[in-house]
Length: 224
Image (cartoon, rainbow, N blue to C red; front, side, top):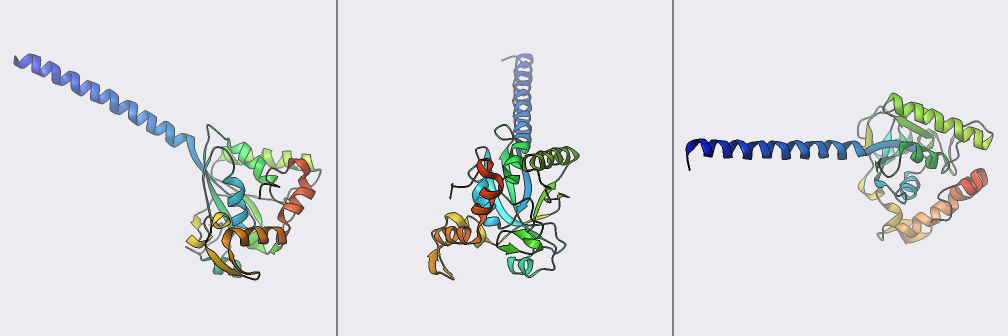
């Protein structure tokens, strides 16, 4: 093949590869923009994880801690107090399937937004509620969601909006607690974690209070 034909063919191949790489990069950016994360605190993180893993468009929910000053806190340190952290969950979601506003709508109706001292049977600052926002746009959406919830209830919503801070995943044994078949020792005796979780949730009165507060608008009552 003459040299100029080889050169032309090589240029064609390089151009084609450049186009393909450009398309791939654009697709990668689009996918990255569609998959987002947000952090909320709603009392017991097992319960919030269980609720939101049922939501269409949610990719993953991780139990952990946020809002404090201590690096890599343990569950024991957080519940003992002094770290400033709240039990929280990090929700990874597909924004093409479920919006941030929809997630907050569900969240606010899955907790007691009138209780500033904890949630249900779990008392203390580490069990209080919060919405952690990372951008001005998220703050505006959160403010609108809280205003809407307050109007729907006819009561003040005490759940605060807080600036996003480092999210620390909790220990492995907390992840997926509500669906684990691993046996653990509880006050009810040895139980599978999934069973222990159900007993705890009922005893703590979470669904009863949410149902009392939100009625038919409560999105997750009866799912457990």
